Each structure stands twice: as structure tokens, then as C-alpha cells.
Length: 344
Image (cartoon, rainbow, N blue to C red; front, side, top):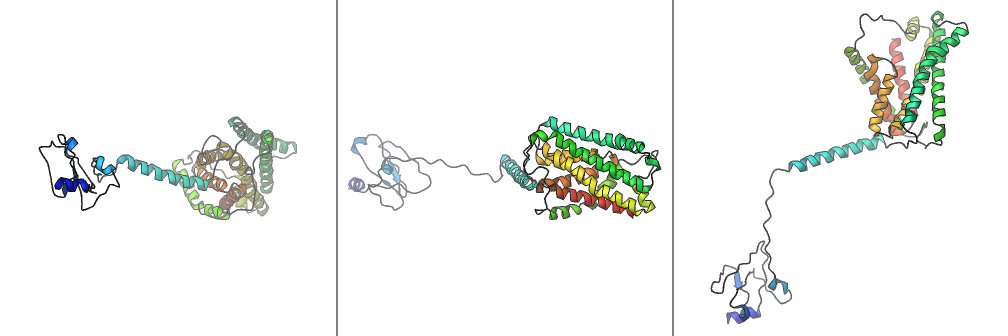
């Protein structure tokens, strides 16, 4: 009676998490709670009984696979409460990479540079040589031929001498750039761009808030590399004109430091050198390297740190806007700030 009942009503495998198939010879039958003999086949009566567990579900012939296949589900290892150090390090690296991507996106992408390192070195070396040659030889020789001696000039004459020298050096630098880059024209629109458009005024205003920090760095630099006591302290022609309170001389010097110098220096260091370096290095690295070159070009060890920091600030503003006007304006404001500080 039991065998006929089981053969008419097949048993469905239960939904318990783990099922083990137990094989026993015919002379031994293991029956536990919630188990029932699923069937007896006289053909295999001398071999095995098959035991299935169930949970009050009725089964039918609709799913024959359950009658023939019973799998053992391996027990999953319990997860440790401690996180894997490799995963923690990977998460830290990914977070750092995401933060770097945000910063680099704010800085901007690389420029399309058609020339190689040879052209970069050529332009910079020619600019340095022309700067030195014009300021030390060409203008003094021209003044000597015209019958003037720089040391004998008045404050206004010295201020005019400085203005002529600075304008000549700037024009020579632009001529060098024009000549060396002529074979690469036309350049893309983000090279040597001057534009009033764009939201760069906020960047310039933010850069102005860096001026006190630049001043602190200048004092710190002096504490690291103080002026030697044996070095004679002399006043520059600008400081002498300010001390004399000559308005014409002060106006001429204001043009030199607040107009001429920012224009020429930004064209060379931010307009040419910084974008050119992005062919071989990331933008942030090009900003740093061009800032160091900018500081070295002033030939003043006592001002290295503030000039490097100032160059980085102006480089960031230029890289974000791809516009030379904001960095020129910030450079002009800084020089004007220093000039007014000397007038106090």
C-alpha cells in the first residue's frame, strides 16, 4: 500500500538551503522527520533507496528533473569582519585618482604642440641672450653714441632709459617667437589668445588674495638666504626715483613694471613655454616647471620662492582660461602692489 501510494504521488525536493544525498544499501533505510520514501523501483531493488526531503509541497510530473538530479550545494565560507587590505588600498587609490581627475579637469587639458623640444630650447635660449645683450650692450651703446651716459642721467632720464630698454627687449622677444614659430603657422585658437570673454575675473580676484601669502614667502625666503653683511646695500633707480618723489619718473617706472614687464613675460613664460611643455609632461607639471624658469629669469635668489608661487598661480589661471589676458592682469596687479609698497 505504501509503495503504491508513493509511486502515484512523486515527492518534490524541498527548498531547504542544503541537501545531501545519502546512499544506503537496501537493507538499511534512514528516515528522519519531514522525509518520505520517494519511490521504489523493483529494477534497482538490490542497489539503492533514494531519500528526498520535503516541506508539505505537492509535486507533479511537470518537473521531471527534480526526480533525477539532486545537487549538493557547498557551504559558502563566512566573510571575515576585517576588510581585505588589498581592497582598502585599491579604494584609497581610486579615491585619490578621482580627486586628481577633478583637479586636472579644472586645470584643463594639454595643448596641441606642433614643435619639438629643440624649438622650445631654441626660443628660450635666444630670448635669454637677447634680453641680456640688449639690456647690457645695445641700449647702453646707443645711448653712448647719442652722447648720453646712464649714470649722469636725471631720475626722469633713468626712468626713460629703463622704459626704452624694456620695450626693446619685449619687442625682440616677440620677434624671436614670430621667427621661430613661423613654419608652424597657422596655430590652433588656444595659442597666444587675448580675449575679454570668459569667466576669468573671479580667478584673477582669487589670485589677488594670494598676494599676502606671496609676501610671507618673500620674508621666509629672506630668512633662509639672507643678504650677506659684506654685500653693499644699494638703491635701485626705481627706489631712488620714489625717494626723490619725482612724479614723471614714478609714472614712467609704473608703466615699466605694471604694463611692459607683465606683457612680455607672460607671452614668453605662460603663452609659449607652459603650453609647449605639455607635449612632454602633464599640465600641472608644465605649470611648475615654467614657474621655476620664470623665477630663475629674474636673477634674484632672495625672491625665488615667492616668484615660483606667483608663477604657479598665474599658470593655473592661464591654463583654466586659455587666455593670456587674466595672467597679464594678475601679474600687473602684483607688480603694482609691490610698487605701491615701495612708495610708502
